Length: 306
Image 1 (tube, one colour):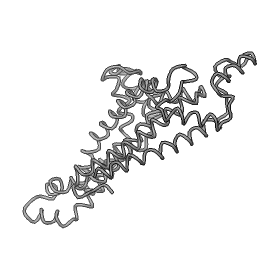
Image 2: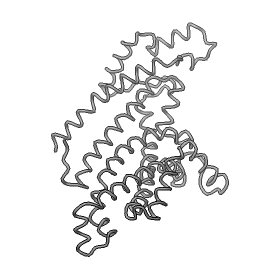
Image 3: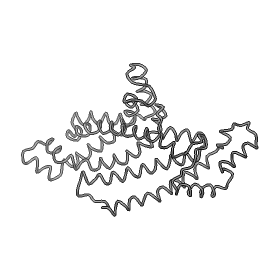
Image 4: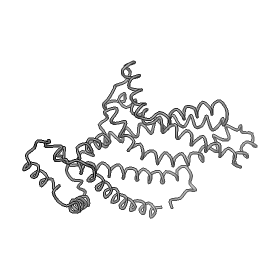
């Protein structure tokens, strides 16, 4: 297991290099000049040339790329062009807020999905199944960009129960977490329902029923753990997606996370900051998938890392 784990960690290096290379290429192809954005359209040509030289933007792209890789090998993500601070420092300041929001959204999704999936799977074709899957379809159909403002209007502006924007205590976290978690809850509930229905026809479930257990008790007592394996796979994939998907939610609720920082960096053509944010998102996604693989063994000991 240790060898397989180390192999997975080693696989992070080419992924990181690919992300850095692709991001570097794309951000330099986007129209716009960060120096003009900072100095304005009426800046003196000499000042523009001097700043481009100071930021090393007058070098050929291959030299800029080589310099970035050399600094990255020493753990240096460079300095933000627009904020004049180290990129690593800015990421450390904003990343905890994104992790907090993604974790809360995942918790909301699991708390909603497990009861819905169990109700639907234990009553396939019945009223509970229809009601639970109807809610799931509704959750998938409403995107974050609409659900977030609707929740803000209802619970903040009309009822005044929760704060409108910003990051503070638990109350500030509720609306963004619900916004992020609803769609994922619908996906997880449908997956759990399908898994329970499939396992309901297994031999060991029929054996449990023949020993006197009710169909629902046999399914939940003996089948639920096996039914969770594909759900955990989906949770691992979507948990990484929540980090990148938090960009829209952070913009809606003015949440001071990494996604909002990334959007600001893109608007300012801040190349080092964009590259640092994208690299952080990509590595987070891969690490979450690795943790998911390791967690499989706690659910099903028959699974081994391959």
